[in-house]
Image: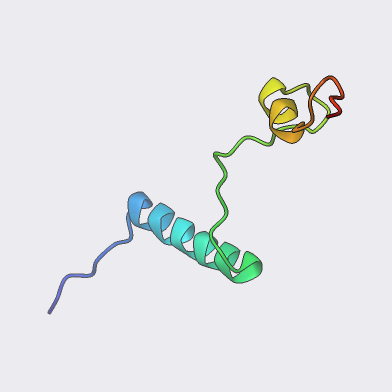
Length: 62
């Protein structure tokens, strides 16, 4: 007779994480990154404001 394999806590956690990830991919269509920090649009960002403004500060006519 084969000995019964007991489910350890690590096996349970691993299976639960895998199932959760697969369900998340089904819901959104792609894996979702939880480490990315959401940047508020209201916060002043010098780099973003410089990238958007391509006009010169003075008007030059020739």
